Length: 414
Image (cartoon, rainbow, N blue to C red; front, top):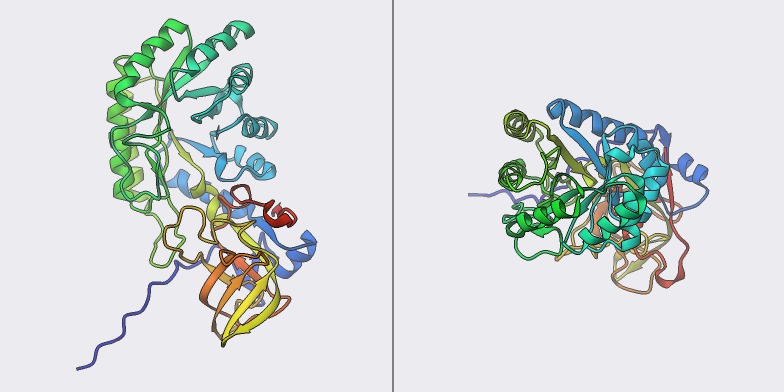
C-alpha cells in the first residue's frame, strides 16, 4: 500500500497584479520599466487600481450606510492617503503628524478621528482646533481637552475608546480584552462618561477595536456582535445620544503558507443585522468599520535588486540592495514568533518555468536580514528584481530605515 507524500501548504495566489511578457505589471507598467521610472531600487509601489478595487469590493459586500474609515497607520504615504481620502468615508489617525497628513490630503475634519494611548497636551489642542473626533483613552485626557476647549472656544468632540471584556479570537494582534494599554476598561467607562458630562465635552460615541489581522469571518462576526452589545449597555450611562459607533476592524490578508483570503459574506450579513438593531436602539448612531491593512496591504509590493548571487555549501543566496531596514515585517522581525516567508517572486521572470530553492537576503551585517528563506523561486542573478508581495501595509513606516546608515526607501503610487 502506498501513500502520497503530504504537500506543504502554499501561499495564496498573488494574482492581483497581472503579468505580461514575463514581468509583473504594477499600475499597468512592466516592472523593469517602473524601476527605471523610479530611478533606483529598492522601492515600494502601490497600485491605485487595486486600492479602488478593494474599496469597491467592500462597498458591495457590506450593507449600504456602513461607514468605511481608513486607519492610516497602516500606510501614511501622503499621496496614498490623499487617494484613499477620496475613496473612504473617514480617516483614523494616531498622532499629530498623521493628522497633518490627513488634513493636507483633503480629509473632512468631521470624519477624522484620533486614537492612541499617549496623546500629548499639544496634540489634543491641535485635535480640538481642527475639529476632529478624539477617542479618549484615559481620564487624564479629560481636563486637557476641557482646557483646550475653553482656550479655543470650541467644544472638544469626543468618543470613548473602550477596552472590552473580551478578545478577538484568532487575531494576529489582540488590541482589547484583559489588561491593555489601549482604551478604558469597560467597567470603568460609566465613571468616565460622567466625567465627560461634567467637563462639558461634546460626547459622540464609542470606539471598540478588539484586534487585527484576522482571517476567520466567524471570529470577526462574534467580536462585532459583542462590541455592539457592550456599546448598548454603556450608552445607558452616556451624557448624550450615541452618534458614532466604531466597531473596529480586524480584517486580515493572507501572508503566509496555508492562509486563505477572508470571506466577507458572513461579516456583511452580520453588519446588516446590527444596522437594523441600531436603527431601533441607537437611532442617531453611525456605524463605522475601521480598516488599515485590509484596504492597502495587497495593493503594494516591495522591490529590490539582486546585487550578487552567492553559493554557500551548495545553497544559492541572492544578495539584494533591500532588507529588514526597509521591510522589517517581511524579515520576520515585526511580531512573528516563528519566522515565515511572505509571498516572494522574481518579478521580471514570472514566466520562467525553472525553479530552485534559494534565499534572498539584504546587505546588512546581521543574519536577521532575510527576505526569503529557502523559497522556491525562478533562478535569478545580478540585475533581477525580487518582489515581496502583501507589502502595502506596515512596510516603510514600520521599519528601522536608519539602521546601519543605508539610504531611505522610495515609495511611489502608480
